[in-house]
Image (cartoon, rainbow, N blue to C red; front, side, top):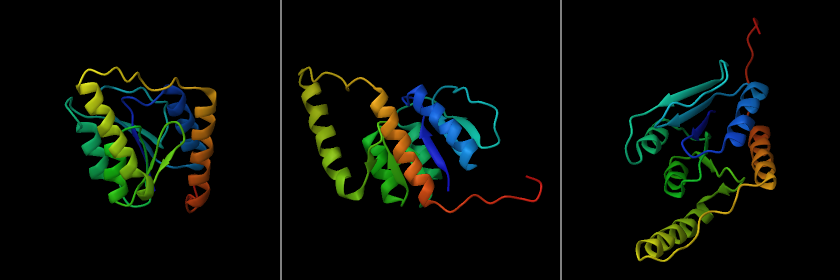
Length: 156
């Protein structure tokens, strides 16, 4: 199992949580972005820079993720696509997208896009708080606890 991160808009505090989790749980974490993303030296953490363009990073994540993988994203259409592939999608605020909730989230996203397109100021997302970071960490820990233990080799 792997963790894929839609890294362009992922808060740095969430990346730091993922970096620590990668080392602790010995799980591959790949950050995918249109721009270069700094990562700590680790055999479990990689960064993949894709060309610029609409949804290029999303397409790369969808192509590479597999059933059981975790995708960290606030992008609702991306979450819907990875759910279709059997991966799980987790919002940086700790909300796990599910097959039961994704249709409603897509509908609300599209409605808000229409409002913004017609000139209505819908405001932006709420500020990112310590409780969001805690909710994400808790959701990540639950996912890590459900996955099979990491394999070790004789040399480790």
